[in-house]
Length: 394
Image (cartoon, rainbow, N blue to C red; front, side, top):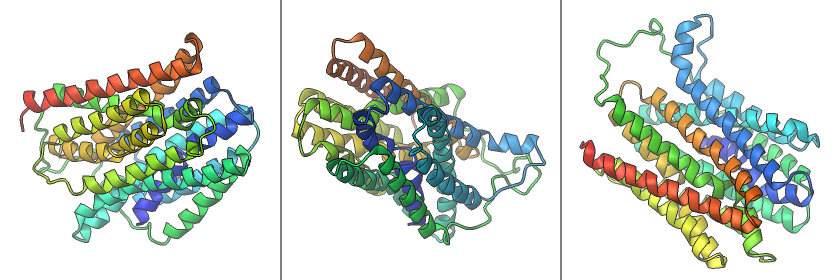
């Protein structure tokens, strides 16, 4: 539960509270759609940088021996506190500072995500229940669900975006206080053995660099494929269904889908090829985007939100399992590389939307073309994983 709540704070609030608050910011004239796209990209750029830092941490600690060997739990605690502070700071009515705040929030969310996973999975393994590790990835969906429900009430009551940021910042501190006594331990960033030295019995890499490069590139397509909908879903729904009472509930439905998908992912038998499962997840998300394109109605958005959310954290979970098979000796660092590639895909999405909105006849046409490109990227990623399952047999 502590791992789940930590990820709810870092991802559901630190990263994705921006999405349900965005309509309030637009309505209040605080930003326009191109400006919102760049704010989103600043956050995703920060997430990518945070993931890169996590990937490089063994190298950094080997090169700079004066750096302290911090515990996972210390970094998680610091990241949770920073998330609360940065969320509160978004209520500060100085738009010039917002890109920096969103950038740092992205770095923080990546660090908390990686080291919460490391801390939690380590403890569960020690307790003899490693299979429960997948349940911590219910956290991002829970955070999105709660933030979405809160935001829908704020919109109905005509509260300002600044008030929303303040409420979410306070909520982040309350949830952090709940898990603070549990998130502790002395698992270190680097082993206490001589730095840079690998154990003599460490398993060696079993697969070539070409296979790993293709796998990484396909994983990055998932970041690009989902991010346009995940960033602009409430805005897209408002354009398609003006005046609907359901407008602010599509985002919580997306969060509920994430929660359900995370639980279902832990029930998948271990013998199934994870690359085929990843291909299936990509297809489900592409269908989710297609549902809102083919039927921009209440039913289409409900089905689309649910299908987009179901595979969201399952993709990360299956990729982690596959990396442990492909690179058993360096799985943690390689997951950081995958997260960075995923971050590149996320960064590219919002600027693409801003570009298309400027060069299409209407906002609706711009969003439609953006979503079609995103769905095509997911279909390409599914095809790549299907090809890998045949070309690189287990």
